[in-house]
Length: 145
Image (tube, rainbow, N blue to C red):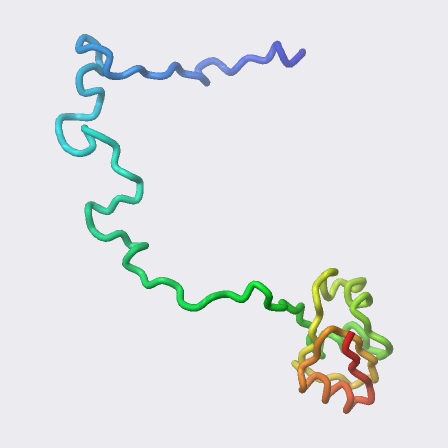
């Protein structure tokens, strides 16, 4: 069997119904639209609400602006670090990418949720104050990349 042998199933394709072509046939004259009224004369827009002010115009506009230059950090908490590195050691952004904790190509910020009990030397793009304090209290170091 080849592609040119394929045919649609019987009854799968039906011819387009031509309406409004003379008064003799079934769909002549008003062409299935009934008589008079807006819907008989022209098509109403999909979101038309009968002349009422539309919902999207009644709602207030968004205030302020969004800074296009804002740095979006990927977040790693201390409890995640202690789970990934139970024996401590050196932690870099590349290590975190390799372990699947963060994605490559985005800056990483370490936050202080949770506790860390092992000595880790963390290198990241940013640290919260509490994360830096907890890492240094455990005997480790926090270095900004």
